[in-house]
Length: 254
Ligand code: G
Ligand code: G
Ligand code: MN
Ligand code: NA
Image 1 (cartoon, protein in one colour):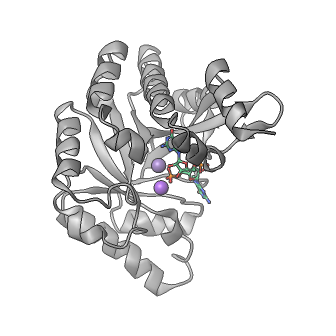
Image 2: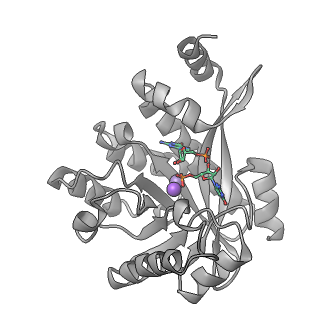
């Protein structure tokens, strides 16, 4: 099996699919957004998670194109949900380093918004902390241009990069997604609770909403709600779902 050939074929044959995982308001308990998550549905090997092929796509220089497909598909899907008169939700799309720094992310987002006619306020771009570690003027400028389009920006996997605090106040962000590694010990370790509470307070003082990722238990949810973390995402409510299952959730609720 040659991964490179298989990925070229995947692009040509359209074997990529998006799964969607709900983001839930801690206050209202309703779905406020969905994160689009890329999967590769190989005709023989089945569903492959992104960790196993995104690095290769990046190496092959194909991730920018696939990223545009993700962006367009997620925006189109959100428009379809709105046309079905479901309560409007944000759709969150992960942006890779190559896509962000590759030159035309601002044009690509602008074009997709025009093409799909999605109201920009229903699109969120997730930048991972490791990607945005580069706190240059260039990074800030791209973020500002994206913000000018009306989309929102979140910092994904927050807390896993080591120099996060130095640039946090300079970035025009809307939300912090607290990395799921922080959730595990919330019930058992006071120190873990203190760290999560500290991140939420930091977010509040910078006017950033927080999203708790990887929430699997009631205790985790209760603690995040008590700390006024605005949204959660995780297996407690739902794993990433195929589009039809996500539509059902959006229609009938959690
Ligand atoms: O869905 P899963 O837990 O397997 O995702 C693993 C990682 O792959 C996540 O950290 C996520 O950010 C990343 N990922 C998922 N979909 C996309 C995508 O469309 N583009 C990029 N760049 N990364 C993605
Ligand atoms: O890094 P990013 O946040 O984009 O990664 C999202 C990934 O996290 C999804 O691919 C999904 O499979 C995974 N995920 C989502 N919810 C949970 C959860 O509650 N527990 C664990 N362990 N993983 C989760
Ligand atoms: Mn993400
Ligand atoms: Na994350």
